[in-house]
Every structure is written in structure tokens, then in C-alpha cells.
Image (cartoon, rainbow, N blue to C red):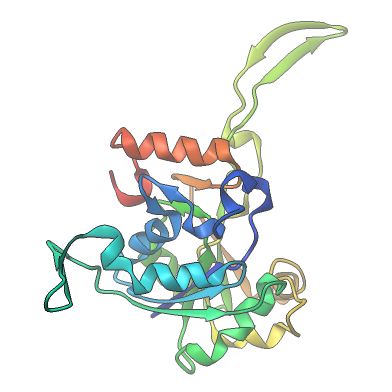
Length: 256
């Protein structure tokens, strides 16, 4: 099974980092968040990836072409004109990076990579800017049991703000907001049948609008509830929080 990763957006809400590189290449613990997402899939046996590139997509191509150079020591023999990678242990992945356009919407990106998917085969899809400890194998099993065209992992959004309790015009107490205070939202980590590609009309199609709405209306969109760790990286604050978890040895998305 292959996993499609949407990695073409501009990441304007984290412009401090994305001005010079695509958002999926912003590093957490010294490695791109894209690497973290792919490692999560690989832990569940999915090692073939189709990356939908767009904004500064050439940097994503360069990252994978030079992956050993990024993560291994090197020995350069100037006389023989040879480069040896020392202690290199590259992940056993097959990665296809596809330029899906600078301004293409999420649905359009998905449709553009259709030729790189296996005909008639179920595939996974997620966003290139969020990590989770979701059980990918369980989502696939759930999807097959539901017999639907699409399964979406739904999550509770991270609690960001506490609440002030009021009595008339007076604040009487404070309480921490919990995830349970919010409803479920789209957490990515989809399992999809190839038929969903027919719901995408073109580059301007936003996956989260017409395609998902049509799937929901026809009873073909199942919801896999995930109540564990899930964290997008939309802002610099969230990037630093993920960095802190990694550095402290507590990175739930990779079982640390």
C-alpha cells in the first residue's frame, strides 16, 4: 500500500521558517517533519510514498536525493573522486516526489498523482505538517470493515486556551480547557479507494470541501476516532513544542 503526502502548500502561518523552505522540510529534532510522518507510516509497514510537492518543491526533491548526505558522515577521496557514506543506514523507502503545481488545491494535488498510484489499490493519504501516534494498521482494518470509499481519522483539537468562568461582570474562577470541550475535527490520516479521485474536478478542487461533503452525503465517509496524540505544526509555537518533546525523549508519534 502507498501513502500520499500533501506537501505543496506555502505554510504562511509559519513564515518565520517557510520563507526559505517548504513547510514539510521544517525540522523537528534536526529532521524534517516530513521524515517524521513517513517514519510513522513505515513503523506500520507502509514504505512507499508519493509526495505532492508544490511551493519550493525542488528542495524536497533535493532532500531525498541527498538523504544520505544529510544524515550520514562522509569520506571524500579527492584522488579517486569518490564519496563514501560512513555508518549510513538509509530507511528502506521508495519515494516519488511529484510537482503538483504552485497554486493547486489539496484535491487537485491528489488527482495529479493518480498516475503514480497502483490501479485499483487502496491507499493512504495525509498532510505534510502534522504528526500523530494513530495506529495506521487499525485505520486500514477499520476502513475495510466499513466497506466505504473513504475513511478519515477524526481527532480532538489540542486544547490551547483556558476558560474564565463568569458571574455577571466578575471573573470567579479559571479552568483549563480540555480536548473533550471540542468536537471532532479532520485529523488527516485518510484511507481511500481510487474511486474518490473521480470526485476531484481539477486543480481548484479543495479536498476538504466538495469531495468530502459528497462522500459524507452518500454515506461513503467513515470516521476513525483517534483519542491519542495528534499535533499539527501550523505555527512557530507548535514547532518549538514538538522540538521540546523530541529533545526530552517524549515523541509519542514515534513511540518515544
